[in-house]
Image 1: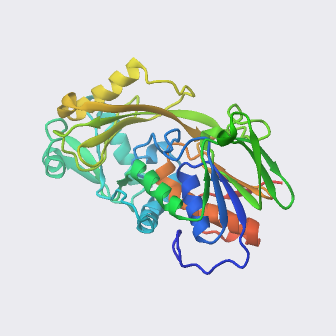
Image 2 (image 1 turned 120 degrees about the vertical axis):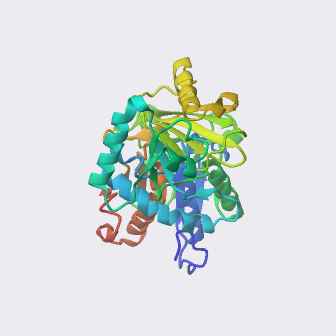
Image 3 (image 1 turned 90 degrees about the horizontal axis):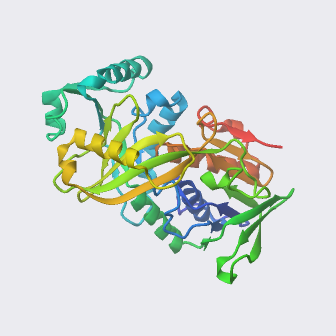
Amino acid sequence: MTLFDKKVPPLQTSTNIVVIGAGLVGRLIALSLVNKGHDVTLIDKDNKDGRQSAAYAAAGLLTPLGEAMHSEPNIVEMGFESLKLWPEILAELDAYTYFQQAGALMVSHEQDQGDYLRFVRYIKNNYPQHPLLQLNRQQIIELEPELGRSFNQGVFLPEEGQIGNRKLLIALQQQLDKSQLTWLENAPVVKVDQQASHCLVTYLDSGQGSGTKKVLACDLAIDCRGIGARSNESNAEAAPLRDLRGVRGELFQLFAPDVHLTRPIRLMHPRYQLYIAPKTKGFYVVGATEVESENCGPMTVRSSMELLSAAYSVHPGFAEASIRQQLSQLRPAFSDNQPKIFVHQRLIQVNGLFRHGFLIAPVVLKQLIFAVDHVLAKNNIQQSPYNKWLPITEEQ
């Protein structure tokens, strides 16, 4: 049985579930639940294109070893497990999506060789079961012919991959639109009132004029709001998460038809982690993994110059690229940078995926489904095989 299996037996009684937040995780769990026969309402402050979500302003990198030096081991392990699960998820979608697992290349300039050597040692010492190939200039040319002029050595991680984040959001939207799901757009949630046997979700109904409140009664609410659930964003009555913060991510979408890179490239640098993700038809996403700031304003001149100069240093062909889009968005993170699932009586909260949303989303989805089954069918959550990476916390 797959995560989105449409051939599951019909439920004896349909459960009324409200999913709050239509980002990546919200769309995934909503589709999984509606395919299982539940009566699902998806509610979000954004419209269906999801441009306000962290998932929209992402590169879709699936690079667990590339993240390893700056992440806990459970994130790396969830990343490798998710690489196995993504093809299963995508196979259930009717629309076109982009998934590639052709490895990733880590490079550094001569003056930053210390970072390169530290990375190699760390991976060899901590993840010896995963292949790591050290390349000289000629081997880089064989792998990526247009990079040999810039780098004398690099590291090839053959298990890494990437996914088309925006294509996936569109494909999930189209799949949900074909289902029996109810999707409420432009409807910010202002109150979540949990009762012993049900949950009341109050939202602002944009279709009835500004300020009109409506209430949804449901058997279970699943809160996937991301940064919208932090205490300074969420109404005090809307189940805010006190330890949640925003971490800024910045990226450019470039159109560079004269640049021909075939897999994700990471530039090891002492001050920031730069990535270049080649998408289809000459488009590239260039970004920095994280900036410890809750400012969601436009990118600064300094950040822009650093990102674009670094991209140019990787491949001079980016000098003639056209800038199609510049984005900055906040990613939700707890103080320990770990994802968390909280289970209350009739409310489940999932949040804190940080910069690892696409990297670990399939495992988060699996564990979230297990949490739903625990609430509805009283399954023992200790039996989940994913507890070792992402434990479910039961709240009183």
